[in-house]
Image 1: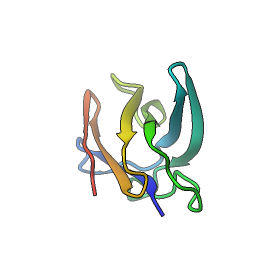
Image 2: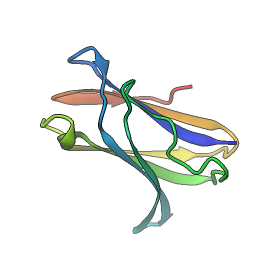
Image 3: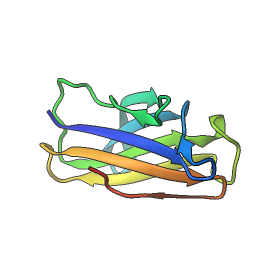
Length: 109
């Protein structure tokens, strides 16, 4: 079954970022998003289950929202990553590397 997962690494501390609330939303229309799931990064900085394991992803636009303010106050209180799912049969892994004054992301495997 297809899924969306994420992994957050704190590049300042050189370790996983545990305890960050993450939400996953699907874009229903230009102005409307539907929440599909939520979780909190574990000790390894991962949220392994953001979607219902029995549900199939659908093509469309998704967003991951990370509440960084609850982890460490910094320049970016929230990070919102918007991405496209073109093949609903694939697994989508979205790593986030963060520091107090910046972040980067990519499509992982």
